[in-house]
Length: 220
Image (cartoon, rainbow, N blue to C red; front, side, top):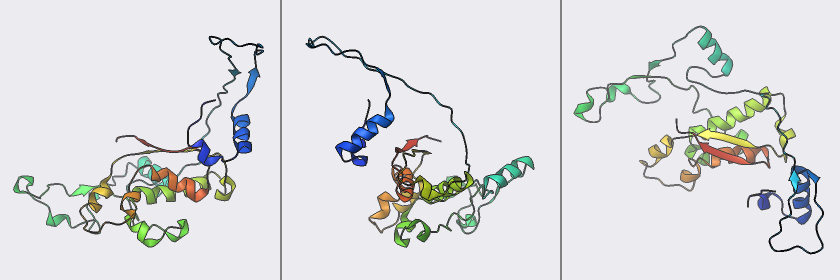
């Protein structure tokens, strides 16, 4: 049975390890073990691997110009153009608009933007305001949508507590960390707010999931 060191952080007694092994393996046949085993002999256990289909039972997400996937789909149906000028709550594009060759200027003033990216309910997720300030918006938005996805699937988050539910997240870029690095204040949450490994771990911790919790760098 293949395991990782992480197993022993999740199961801490011999009984729990035995239970894990029983749940995750099925021995179909076991060849008889000879009384005397020579050094060059090998004992092989046949373990049946079951392949099951994957069902998508819940969806949630936010896209530029679309606060829900239903709104996103409707924008697609209507061929709606969600490109707009850079909103003033992001930055005043007029201050930087001009010939790039002149230095610290750009000729770009249009883009697509998420709404309410700064409306994270930190208290709901048990996160203090200071930590939330240093959290990459990717972390905040993912937490919100993970919760919405569970609701969309018809589950209560409490029902997943202590379950072997796995969480796998595709993530990339450190734009927020780049911005924070230009800020003179360094906080204990500066690194934890941006590292990719904590993105799935936040959800696993909040929901008390005991399955694998991994981030996968998916480039673009």
